[in-house]
Length: 448
Image 1 (cartoon, helix red, strand yellow):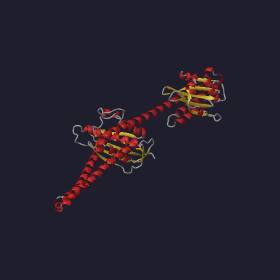
Image 2 (cartoon, one colour):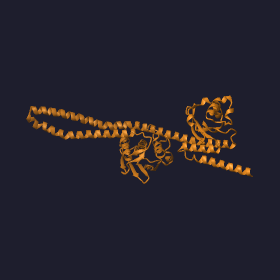
Image 3 (cartoon, helix red, strand yellow):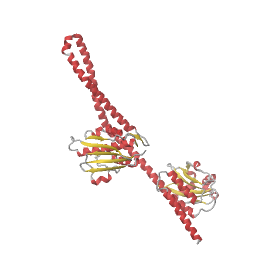
C-alpha cells in the first residue's frame, strides 16, 4: 500500500511540475524569465545540480548556452559556454542528429570517441549528464539537459520523462516566439516596401505640385526684370522730354505699380507652397523611430494631405474635422504616416473608379479625429464605390487588390491593418455601402 501511495504522490508531483512549466508559456513576452523558471522547475524536479538550454547559431557552425539554472552551491558556467564550434563535439552532435538521448552515467567512462566532450564536461566538474535534442519549428536547433557535479549513477526514469516533456514545451514556445519575430520582421519589411512604393508613387505628383509654383515664380521674376528694364527706358524718356513724360511714361509707371505687388504676392505664395510641400515630404520620409514617440496626429494627417495632393485634388474635396485636444499622442510616427497615406489614396482611387465616366464630378473625403477616454479615433470617409459584399472578408489580406495592374501592389490596406492591430494594438473596421462610399474607423489606445 505504501508503494502505491508513493507512486501516486510521484505521479501527482510530476503532473504539477509539468503543469507549472506548461502554463508559464501561456505568454512568451519575456521568454528569458519564463525559460529560466521552467529550467528551475526541471532541475529541482530531477534533483539536478544544473539545467540548461543550448541553441545553435544561425551559421549552424557554433552554439551558445542561452539559459541556465544552478543550485545554490553549483557554479554557473553559461559565460564560458558561448560560440562553441559544433564540429569540436562530433560524438555529441551525431547523437543529437540521430534524435538520441544522451545519458551519461559517469563522465569518466566516456569512450575515446567522446574525448572532446569528456574534457569540456570535466572542466565544469560534471559527473553525470542527461540531454535531449531541442527542436524549434521541427528543426534540430540545440539541446536541453541536466547534470550533476556531485552524484554519479543512473538518472531516474521520471527525470527522462520530465526532460522530454520540458523539451517539447520549450521547443514549441520558442517556435512560437520565432514565428512571431519573423512575422514582425515581415510586417516591418512590408511597411518599408510600401513606404518606398508610396514615395515613388508620389514622386511624379510632387514634381508636378512643385513645378506649378516654380513656373509662376519664374514668370513673375521675368516680369519684374522687364519692369526694371521699362523703368530704365522711362528714365531715359524723362531725360529726353518732360512733355512726353506727361503723356506716356507716367501712365506706364502707374500701371507697373499696380502689377508689381500682384507679381510679388504670387511669387511669395509659390515659395510658401514649395516650402510646405518640401517640409511635409521631409516629415513623411524622415521618421524611422523604433519606439513610440509623442506625435501631433492632426499635423501628421495634414502633412500626408499635402504630399498626396496630386492623388486626390482632381478627384475629391477634402473636409477635415480635427479634435484640437489631440496634441501629444504616443505612436510610431513613420507607421502613422504610412497608415494615413494608404487610406487617403485608397479613398481617392475609390472615388475615381466611381466617377470614371464623368471625371468632372468630384467626390468628397472627410477625415475626422476624436479623442475618447482611453483611445483616439480616426475616421476616413469617402463617397466612392463602396466595398462589395463578396470581398469584405478579404480586403486586409496581403496582395489582395481590385485595382488594375500598375495601380499598386495590394499592400495598402494590409499595411494599414498591420500598423493598427499589430504595431499599435488598436482596431480597424469599416462601414460601407455599395455605390455610396466607405468609412474606415481606426481606434488607437492611449498609452501614457
